[in-house]
Length: 119
Image (cartoon, rainbow, N blue to C red; front, side, top):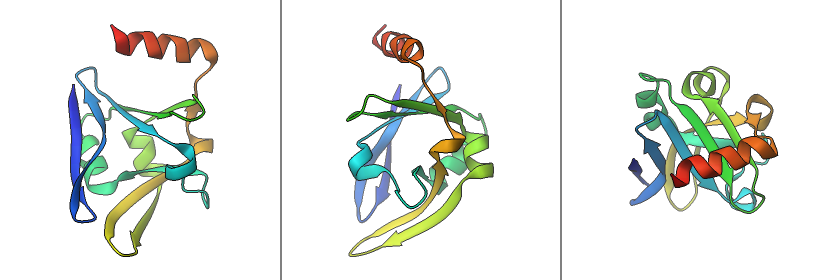
């Protein structure tokens, strides 16, 4: 397991965790992190490009709702949309994938995912 840290907006930020099982997991607050215009979640495009080599499973867990979504890096790259936000700081280019392109976990899948990560 390896925390993924990128430099964005002038400081280091943890964007998720990459597991030895070829899974990238990211926890988000849907009220803060969801890009509402597309109803999508994003990943730093430079990091995503590096991930394409092994095409890991990508899991996004909404900590405020308990919903869990998954896709893979190849799908994210092929069907996502690029955005580059700049306000007071530069947040670098991100790729956003609308939730309609993700698999939403059932209650059984959420239970299995939760217990898998605790083992």
